[in-house]
Image (tube, rainbow, N blue to C red; front, top):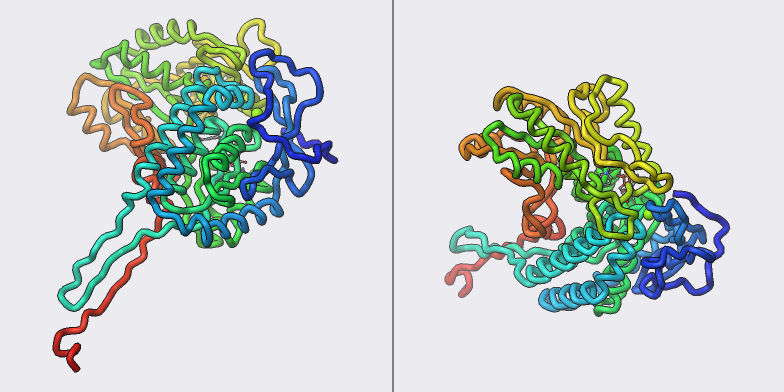
Length: 516
Ligand code: NAI
Ligand code: MG
């Protein structure tokens, strides 16, 4: 991401929803527009710095727009706005009204679905159909949390006849949401919707690669009746806007999704200021396939798991653990299917779009080169698609016999690259699966239900899928163990992140005391 300064900002910061983006025509002539970078108090504003980040279309490598380089001063303004809303208009409305507003916002997303999908595709490159699915998922997330807003009940605690003791669930307060670039709208919705249902006010810092749809979400929320200060967005770099957000004294809690490395920093900074934090970090997720599995189902699940969103998913399949007797046959079928996946120039439908950025492309390329250097056998892909000169495209890539010490075998790659390893029996499969510091998702394919349930218990992962992959939606909690983080998002567990328990105890005077 490059920075341009001083900024040729127009006087009036533009609305991203008014932009006639070059979605269909690919016409990028003329100066790229600069958008309202930060969205505070229901108003688009420029960042105080006056500097902008250039937004690059990853399928053409062209600069298509600019968004603000928000920093500490912008975070200050957002925090003030969020605090005022919490103590004022937002704090005064009923839980049912909060739910109604979330439903109105869901409907607004549906009305703008095509526009949102085009913005997303332009920003991060994913095929249009995938962006459309992400809008549908975000709508479902808003509706799920809307329904929960007036059902967040405390409890009554039995302490005997002399006491009445009860708990109330209070909103945590002003919450910070630092989101990644792989599902920009989906991650913003997943993080903000439960916070709003719980009665919090929010500040979102989208990834510097992908600000468009988060800004659009905030604009739509203003239109849907959310009072000023309830959803604020500050765009910018993690080290500037992100750090300022996590450490701001007016922020009561932090939800972060991204890399383990950055998660460590965010966790440490939150710890210093005694803030609760949810960390959803990376994975190196194994899919274990036994010889007794339904092979076609396993191949289908592996294809979807490894190549959906070009492998840029925290829970994607990155290691195939195959029982020795079926390893060759599985790989033959898998490679034959992977070969037929289509790469699309970002704006169209198809299987794989480009990777999000040059940095991400370089990281994936480094992992591939390192695996080859250490003797890994490349079965498919490994380079840009034939004839493709621009855009951060990478072919579906399959390896076998990768050295366990290589980056590809041991670190999160976040690209359309999967490596296959062999195993003999259950114990070896578990040793391989659990042998890394990560623990986000894991899968088992077998026809033996006892084995499936035995292994589900032994796998060190926040999510285990049996005979499928990517099972579940907004209702199912997700999160990691070990270095993949802690805390759960989605489901009712996701709302609990934004509530705190207040215990109220009363002493009940006895009849004799009362008379006295
Ligand atoms: P990142 O973890 O650095 O970025 C995620 C978010 O954190 C962005 O909004 C970023 O601006 C923010 N951030 C960065 N440094 C920060 C700091 N010091 N304080 C507060 N916020 C900060 O990930 P990045 O650099 O975009 O990608 C690197 C790798 O991270 C990828 O190759 C992939 O392996 C992994 N990743 C994992 C994701 C997941 O869903 N688990 C999502 C995105 C990336
Ligand atoms: Mg981008």
